[in-house]
Image (cartoon, rainbow, N blue to C red; front, side, top):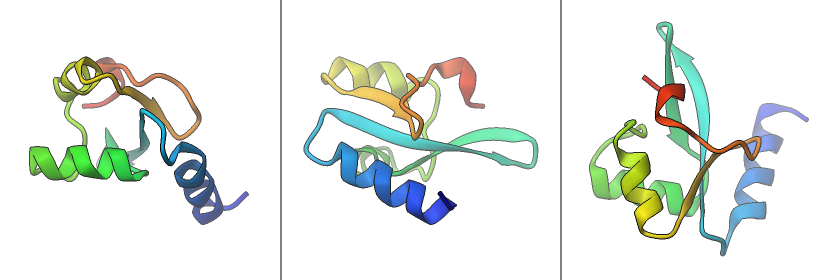
Amino acid sequence: MDAITRLQHARSVSDGTHLAVYEIKQVYGRPLAYPVNDQAETFQGLTCSKTLRPHDIAKIESLGFTVVTMHGERLKPSMIG
């Protein structure tokens, strides 16, 4: 699967769920988490940040959402910088 197809698949699978899905990209050697689905984009709009910050994960999870990578792995604060 190419990158666009993977993003579309992650978005369609997570619609209507309590999953906030992010894609981790290396930017100048730093791992950054970019939103993939509508839920994640909404959280990023609320925080006025393009990428997920480590301290945001606990706040999002306190609202009943699960923060995961595109591959379904639970996102931990230590995974992003």
